[in-house]
Image (cartoon, rainbow, N blue to C red; front, side, top):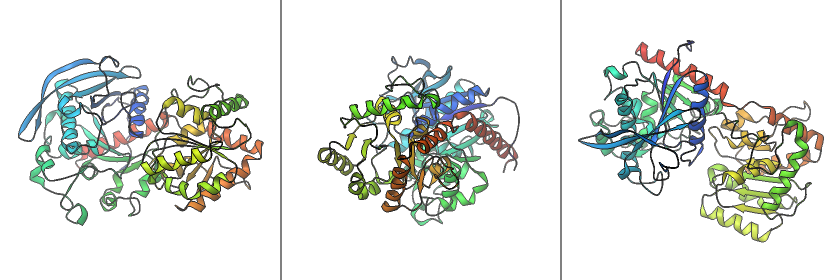
Length: 492
């Protein structure tokens, strides 16, 4: 079916478990914090819904109570919730489901009742739209937390006049996290009569896979880069859902995430030592010196400074780094790492920093201010991921003139082109196989090119000139929304 082209404004309700600036665990929060602003600029009526966690202070974010004591059906019982309202951007409404028993907790995720918590969130989001008499054209769901909604549109809400012309779009940010629960969740969600859905997949035959339901029932499915949309159709990247995804591949679209150009602007970033742009690239060196000072490394503008900002986990390629880190340090480089994750990687980098205090610095935290300084001060940025649906860090690094060294997968492959000296093309360094010595070879290529300052400057400029803003991606989403409506209205 061809994508529709229509100038009518859309009413879009976006559901997500986390949204910047309120709470953030991963890239999902960045995407859902930025996309609505770009959609609004295109003339659409966009509203968001998320849980009101303990971490979201109503006073700090100027939240107002919009609906009090709204009953939400949960299987055989009801839960009363309040709906609070905040805003992002140019007064884009953010509705927050306030249910202290479910969300007033130390962490966002990781509880035995996570399934029930997010069922409540999703049901409350839809009932809030009804209470506000605002019938959306699109309900845009994100990751497993909201995967039940497309299922409901074919069951609980089927034939409901309020949602009769509402299509669902389901975005997979990371297929590895699917929301796997037992049969009781179907009862809480009110869809037990349909039972399990995957008799043909032995590992999924007797469990509830919430993300799988989102994929099965959504009018359109998106994921966060063109390459990842193709990869997840294969057993290698499909996380046991590749069979299901292939059965719906006509509905699967890849749209590369953008980055927020207001938040990530080296010419106006208050967090970095010295603002700069393409025409003032010589000033960038002051940020490198400031980073070396902050990291307690010897100040030397000529030493190649490699950086990594990441969850410290195998998926992000930390197992590859650990296998080559000693020969890498023998090259005389400096390495700055920021992130938290698996304890053995915490210990590895702490040991390295103690043993090589002139070469290695570790920030076991995530701090936006320090992150921006690392982007602005590093020469090279490492992302050797096993898989990477989109990746935002490599785009931010390029915007700040740090040259990426990445694996040729997912969104990394869609945004970084390998430098080829023969044709003088490319903006970074790629390696193909998930192999430590391929990564090492890519770093060595980069270190060789780094010695030629004019060539290196060209790579920096290419990265800084690349357009990874949200404008183009938002227009693609609008096309997908219209496409989903066409699917929905055709009854296919």
